[in-house]
Image (cartoon, rainbow over all chains, first blue to last red; front, side, top):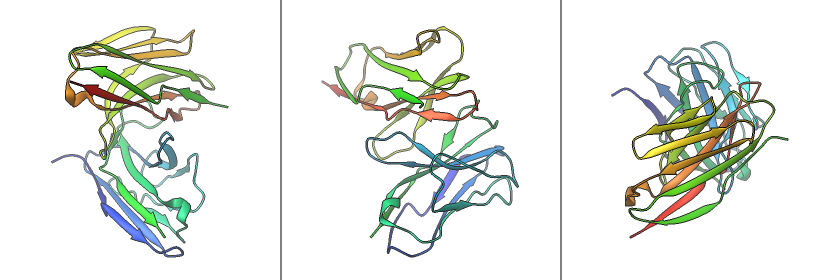
Length: 114
Length: 109
């Protein structure tokens, strides 16, 4: 089934630990995105990648890093988690870069940092 | 700054019509999206407007006025399954997607 998957579904993490959220798409989309969604706030872009091998910073990149070694995978790493990173994280992809095409979202990862 | 404004919450009756408004102030404009998000799920695409006017797609329609910085999503013949949050998002001149906080729509029988 074509789509975008994320792992894990949820995670409870101690502050200071390192964590990688995984994201894989099989639609051969060029662009991929990581968002966080907090209650009362809109989706906020953390990092994005317009094509394999390139990445860029979004609105709230501090404390997060990404890599895009190939078209399909776009992992998000929290080097040293803090409680303010408690959130729901969504990965998304789109056929075209520059936000001009529909974004397809993964099911999300609910992360709690204690 | 860049801002997207939507009502936080709206309530409507099954079978009725509801209009969800979105106003935006962004650095430039290259299009506007509406997404639907059911509780605990991912957002899914509903519509895209780049030119002024109304785009109709089944029970859902989306309207855009670029001169007024305004859009609305119109939902007709409301069903209980339409209970969800509706997200407005604008592409600015730097091709960044700016998201509103969403409108939670509650449908009552």
